[in-house]
Image 1 (cartoon, rainbow, N blue to C red):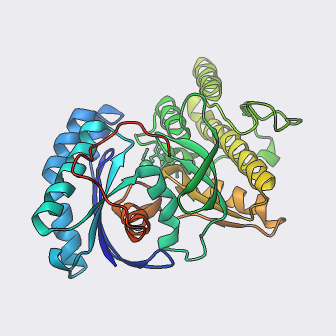
Image 2 (image 1 turned 90 degrees about the vertical axis):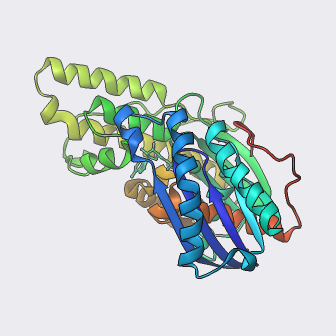
Length: 347
Ligand code: KG4
Ligand code: ZN
């Protein structure tokens, strides 16, 4: 089967062609039009995102078809993100997919954006198959899932407040770094001396009580707003001491270490409870090299395997939507004409 994927849930207008079966998939083309305009505002402006999707959707799809040397009649189905996300942005993708489906007589397959993130890794690592523990960490989501099989997702934990990526973005702002802040914070943190050389910034590890028990309601959940406030205090303190420049890297490092230790511990607990040896990471924060390394080190002793997509497939893209859509389409699922965008929908 050959499937066209369309993704417009946030600030990336993306189209891709994927060919094969869920066991053996080939990515034939991927176009991602990133809306850099949001940098001016320090965050995504929904109305601007919708307008940019409107101008980007046709060229994105046409380029994806051309790059794959495929024409619409040779496409078997169209997969489109229908939830969750910015409703105006999602509507551009779902309306376009439905129109294209109607014009060419192709089935349209609605895809949950987060299920897409779970399938992203499969495009590069054929072994990233269930059962596995999944950590989805982006600007909008922080979810810990148990995945016994494709299509079966049990939510074990999530953030009580800020998403991890959001915390990176806010800390970046405090440190005078550009938006989106994840990569700049990681780069700045990498220049700090290692904790073994007298690391001065030790921030709290939120909801990580050492002697936690599974019945604790925060055993798998996390929280990042307290950590963000601790960073704010450290920045103010450094400013008052007239030494923010000297302490920026150390603050970034202290923040990143606290986030990573929390996430690795939560994933480890989930994998141990469900006896999973595979871990799949997804979402923009999964690009973080220090997070990937810490996760691999933690699981190495258990003979575990940690899979993370390359940055192009970790952040929002249509290839992952096509991959998840392929699985759904092969099960015979497709949208009825009333299918529409939904801003929030549990996985
Ligand atoms: O998945 P994504 O592209 O978009 C959604 O939010 O859905 O994720 C973007 C988020 C941003 O918050 C960005 O700061 C974060 O991912 N991010 C990172 C890194 N690269 C991107 N966070 C930490 N380390 C990184 N290297
Ligand atoms: Zn996403």
